[in-house]
Image (cartoon, rainbow, N blue to C red; front, top):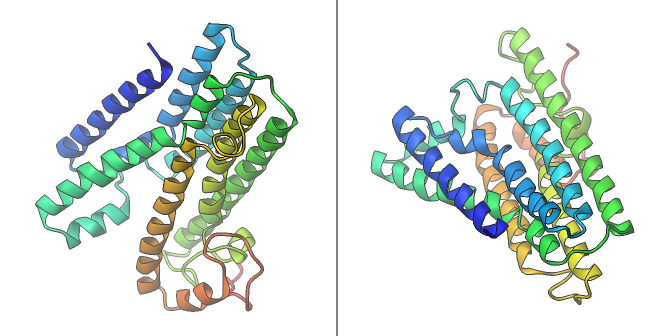
Length: 281
């Protein structure tokens, strides 16, 4: 069976499982729990096919290994926040209160499950480009691989800074001015972890494009190919999610308005004015 078809079937089973579990448990965070796992499975399906075919599998093994490192980091971060203990994403609870039950169930099926699980397939499809264009690893692959790892380190650091802030906030009794992280990477971006997360998938797209270019494809169809829809839709999802999250945060913390004016939303950039600072722990 073609690896792409195996991926599609696997995604269909995972989607059905997430939807049914959300109905049985009344918890809509099952896609969140699968988010860091299924892309790793998809990449190794593509890599395994390349290895089994006898073609040069170096690029696909690199891609699968990078995504595995991404998945390990994200799974660890999600687990330590209680993501696998039955805690639902607070944003889904807010949306549930704002919608009628039947409206929320349509939203659950079409957006939370179908859209997001489809997106998790789309962002891995640069591996299909690499599979269809077997070619030895080149310097660009190594550059992109190093960039992916640098972005992974950046996201790990941002997650640690956010985790430490919330740990100190909990120790302070649930209140720690200004109410949200503003130091370290959060001095330069309101959501540095979101920036690094999206960027890694753009780099994975670049590795797939490198395979097409190395096989003789031109700019269109090579450097720019149909799998670009994955990172584009991922960025659209993150921007929409960020706007919604910030609307909640701004309603809870008055100081967030100043932080928003002074600090870039996603791309790390020097603050336009001195940001709100946190008191010493």
